[in-house]
Image (cartoon, rainbow, N blue to C red; front, side, top):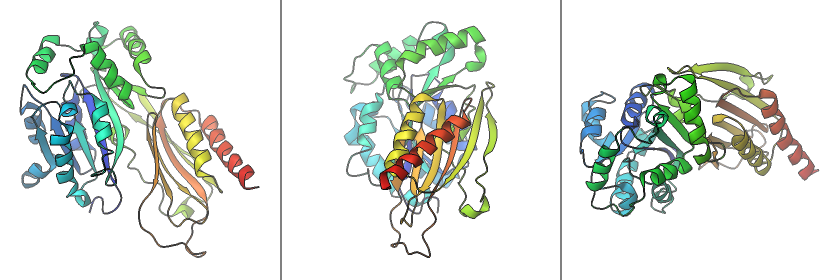
Length: 363
């Protein structure tokens, strides 16, 4: 079973019509190695995105109807209670056989109502928001527009009678970016260095502190960056007793090198101090993703750590008996970090600072 315990990670993919959301989803479904369910919200051109995903062969034909759900009754941000929550409840009935759920919003959706809906009592204990990913059209932005075909976007708006947010397109664009943890710039292969820099400068003031812009082409991006780090930290921590650091790089088709660091820090660290240091690290550096485990003194289960852009979440998986001296692991931190030009020394110093804060607190 894919997810026999714990909460199902949910990734929200937003962006205007034509930004490349469906191309990205096809890539993730075919190349992530994860068993994903997809919720697609579209209208005005009903069935096009769903048909493209359905035909890509991401799962057996007899399983596709339970893994791909199309909602065409209007923009999800206006029909959250009527459409989104019941659909999520149906998908969660199969949670034990899923690695995650991806929600592709319509181009006119505001992410915030969906993010709020993920905290509704009916589903909040069964899922966790894994990240909000915004797709933007780099070629259109370089040409001075937030969307390649404004007329098509306006037609989409007029086709949905439920829309009650008549905001200007630029305002919708700003709100999508404001909610994003990770921004993927599509059609980056069509841009020269100067145009790329101009797009980055246009996006920068619209982003949350710590949000990262990653250029991509034809939907090709390392699935780990969008869906999370599935590379496991070691189950047996004694396999690397010296806490070695491992560096490698991920490359996508727009020639952006993403570095990876695997860090281990033995010894007791307090949860609060660690979360404060990680939150600061995520705001200040070009970290795209991190995942890890913190073994706390006296705890049989580790604190799970997950972040995308500035969004940090830490939790304990449910269950587990009270620890005994024999089965309680020694305290320590395991962390895998993905990002650009990572300063390993600064990251390690930040983690050491969290450790020292804990030592002072218990002294």
